[in-house]
Length: 129
Image (cartoon, rainbow, N blue to C red; front, side, top):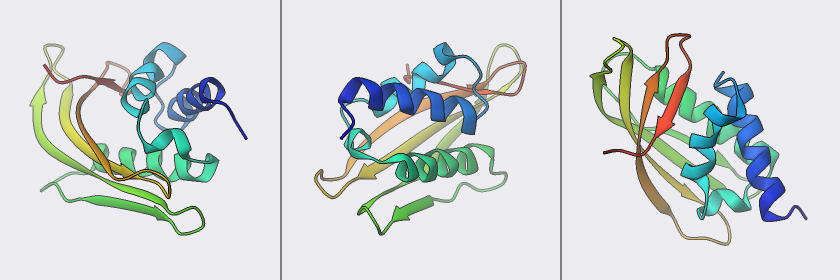
C-alpha cells in the first residue's frame, strides 16, 4: 500500500504527463487540489481516468457539460464541470472548474478551482480568488 507522500507525488507526475503541465511545480496545483480528498485513495488507473476527464472538460468547446468518470473496479469516480470562462492578462483562456470526487471509503467531496493556459498552452491550476 502506498503512503500519502508517494501518492501525492504520483498525482503530480501523472498530472504533468497527462495534462502537459510540464514541471512538477506546475503540477503542484493539482496536488493541492487533490490533497485531503478521496483522490488520496485512488490507484493509478483512477488517477489516469480523473486527469483524462479533467483535460477533456478544460479543453471542451461550446456549452459546458459535465464530464464523468468511473472505475467500477475500485468504486472511485467523479465529474468535472466548467462553470465559467475568462481571459487572463496574457490573453490566454481561463476556466473556473468544479469537480466532485468519491471513493469506496470516502463520501463525495467537491471543490472549485481556476485553470488558466500559459503561453505554451499548458493548463495551470490555482485556487479561485
